[in-house]
Structures are given as structure tokens and as C-alpha cells.
Image 1: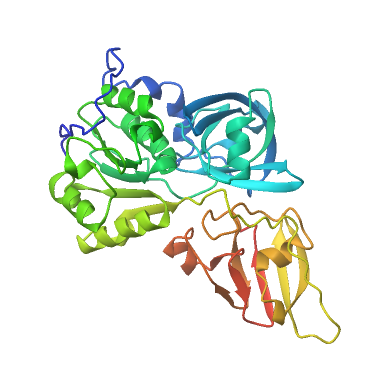
Image 2: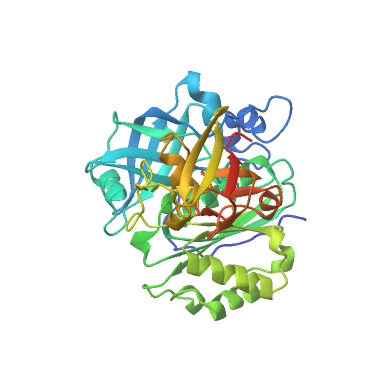
Length: 408
């Protein structure tokens, strides 16, 4: 597909006056190109082990808005292979706060760079971890950072001529920043279009970076800012995005028939609205990727699994799991209806998890034997389900014996 001048319905703020690099030699491709190539295929791909935490030092904490910061970690060379990642993936952070272990997952916001990894953290009302990170975290501190995970990414070895569209709300911009940078720098003909909704101008994360990216790729990047609590010149870009507004956008701003891949990231309501609207416009489901974000408040903190007493003579389920080559078995009372993750944490505190809400996919394992009821799933792709993968935080045994493997 020939490159089109996508234009932009931006906020009209001043942008960088530096000359834009040529499309053939993008400025951000020189150092990262060979490294990124090793993460998307070929004989030099690093074989990744399961998700693990390592202590990393904070190199910088940079304000993005009044309620959001970008946190950059230094990755030492001996751990560099463990922290290779694709744009669109996330890491989990772990910190002891108020006497409790807190784990939060955050998308990586920068294109792949060896020796460094960056996330954006937006303060949530009542959120313990996000409030601490925005108020107290500073350069020189250390945090436990899990190795990158996630499938919210693109086939990055076949980008030429592709038209990719992202729809994001608030901090949902984070993974799309890394995707936009990478897509535009790796191909001279790929196009990226973004619909980004916030309450007001002051809430827009990465505002300057988006403007600079637009300066760099003026004919291949379009950014449509939609503000729900601030009046804009164009009525289409003012107010909340509902079914009517999104439908109009697909009529006058973005033609679905020209789009190769869609990326949706935000709260459930927006993501589901976008999925339904795209489906109604004939967009195949396998062309749409989505990722939900959850707030930091009202979070479950399953540090070691909630206590469960097994009474003598009580009917139980045998849960067996393999982790790091070691098999463990735990008996779970049928009456407790506990998740596989909760049961496993009672005997192995190192079982991987992050959100415990069916969103991030960190607790994924393959069901080897038995049957389960998975109550929620916002992380596994259809092909993963077909291959027997489950989210252990949401899976409850339905058979007398269940066997899962975290190592597959």
C-alpha cells in the first residue's frame, strides 16, 4: 500500500523544529535495529525462560503529567538477554509497601534498547503502588522487575506497506508509544494512526513525544486527540467516545478496509466498544489485538495464597504443577473452590503472577490433565486456548485431579 499523507487532528501545540530524518534512515533505528531483529525471529533469538524477578536500579523518574511518571531502569549486561522485549509487552514491578507485597504490571513505553527498560505509571485514586511511585520513587532506588511478558505486539518482520491503527485511553497509550516508534522506524512505507482519548490536555501522556514523532514522520503518522472534558474545534474530537462517535470516526477519519492491524488499549468499556464497533464494520477478529488496563485501587494481593484448611475426611482435589522442572502437589478442598494459583502459592511462593485478575497473562500454564473452569480471560489468544493454556489465577478445578505445567 502506497504511503498516504495521514494528516493529524492534534492539539495544535508547538512541536520540535529540528529537521526530520529521512524515512530511509530513521534516527531511532541505528542502535536498536540489530537488537530488535534478534527479538522477532532468526537464528539469534534468545530462548527466554519463564518470567522471573530481578532487582533493577532506577536510572530516572521523569514527570509526564501532574499524575504520571516515566520510570527508566538500568539493565546490567549480565541480565540483558532476560530483558529483551517486543514493543507492546509489559513488565511486573514488585515492592513491599505498608507491610504487604504489591505487584503491578506496566507496559513498556520505549522501543527496544539493550541495557534499559522504561514504563509509565499513572497515579490512580486510592492506588497504593501508583501513588508511591509518583510521590516517592526516585533515581538510585531499586525495584524487583519481572522479565518482559505479553502478546500485545505485531508481526514486526513484515511491516512494509502496512497500515496500523491504535485506539487508546489515558495510560493505554503506553504500549502504543513503543509500537508506533518501532513500526515507523523499521519500515519506510508503514503507517501508524492513533485515536487517543483523555479528559483534558493536561492529562495527555507523552504529548511532546507524540508531537516529535509526528514531526519525524509527517506523512505516515496521524494522531487524533479526543478530549472528553475540554471543548475542541471539531465536535467529533470533543466528548466521550461512544458508539456513534466511533462509528463516525470510521466513516470520516479511518477507513477500516485500509487497516491491516488494530491495537486497542484502555479500560474494559472502551475496548469492548471498539471491538463491537469494528466487528459491526466487518473487521475480522483476528486483525484486532486488545489489552485492558486495571486500576491500582481495589486490588487482590495474593502474596502466599489465602489460607485454606483441609479438614479430615473432606473431599479434596489434587492439584499438581511443574515449575522450574520441579513438581509439587497440593490438596484443595472442593468446598473452597480456590483457584489453581491460590493453591499453588500455598506451597510455592515463587509461582509467577502479577495482576491476579485475568488480564496480564503472567500466571499462564498449560493444562496437562483434568478440567478447569476459567472464570475470566482477557489475556490468552484463541490459539493459546486451543493448545491447552489457562490462566491459573482464574482456573478452578472441575475434576478430581488437575495437572498444569508452567514450564511449557
